[in-house]
Amino acid sequence: MATQVETTSSFGSNNKTKYRYDVFLSFRGEDTRRTFTVPLYNALRCKGINAFIDDRKLGKGEEISPTLLRAIERSRISFIVFSRNYATSTWCLEELAHIIWCQKQKNQLVMPIFYKVDPLDVQYQKNSFQEAMAALEDRFRDDLEKVHKWRSALFEAASLSPAWLFEEDGYDEGEFIEGIAEDAYARLPPKRFHNDDYIVGLEPRIEEVMSLLDESDNSVSMLGIHGAGGIGKQPLQKPSITQSSSILKVLVFYLMSEKRQRNIRVLSAFNKHFYQKFLRKGR
Image (cartoon, rainbow, N blue to C red; front, side, top):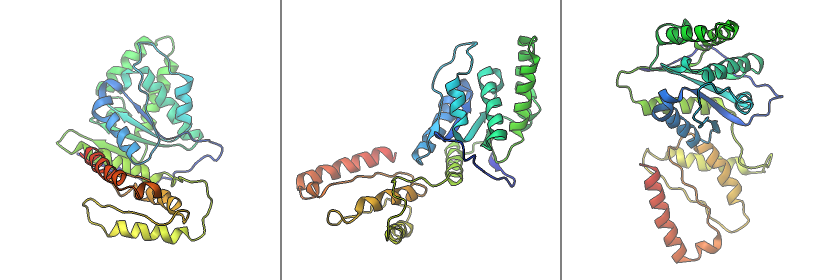
C-alpha cells in the first residue's frame, strides 16, 4: 500500500537563503538507487524541478563533503528515502542530521519517504534500524555523542509530516513516484522562464492557451502558435510551457523561425523528427 500522511504544516522560506536546488534527495544507494530514487529523480526533472542527487559511489569511511552540505542548505525541499539499510551508512546519517538542522534553522521543508520500511522502525530504531545503531554504538564507542545525534535525527525525521509510505503489496510504484513528484511541484513557487516582470496584455493570452489545453481529452494534443515576426509569440510560449508542465506527462517544444516555415522540405523533416522524438519519449 502507498499512502501520504499529512498534518497541518507551513512551508516558509528564509529570504536570506539563495536556493540552488528545488529538491535534495537523501537515500541509501545500495537499497534504492536504481529501483526507486533515480526514477523519482527523473520524474522530478520531467516536471521542471531542479533536483540534486549524489551519483558518487562512496568508499568505506569517507566523510560527507562540504559541497554536499551546501547542496542541502541551498535546497528548498529535502526528500529522505528511508529504506532497510539507510542507517548502516554514516554518510546518510550525517546528511540526515544536517537536513534536520536546516529544517530547524532555515525552515526547510523535509518530507520523509518510507520505502518498504515501517515508520515506527525508523522513529524508535527497531529491527534493521536497531541492528544498525547498535553496530554504530560499538564502532563509535569513544564518540557516543555522534550516535546520539543520529538517533535524535532519525526520531525527528520520522515524526515529520507530510510523509509518504510505500509497502510491498503490489501497488504501482510508478504511480507512487508520480504522486510524490506532483506534490513537490505543487509546493514549490512558480518558475519563470523570462526576466520580464510584466508584459502588458500577456496574461489573457496565456489563459487562452491554457483553456485550449484544458478542453483537450487525455489523448495526444498538438498546439501551434504562429504569426508574423515580432508580435510576441516567444514571450507567450515560455510561460505557457511553465504552467502546462504540471498537467502534461510528455511535452515536446519546438521553435521554428519564419524562414524555416517557408521551406517545405525543412518542415517535412521537422514533422518526421517531431513524431520520432515524441513516440520515443512517450513510451
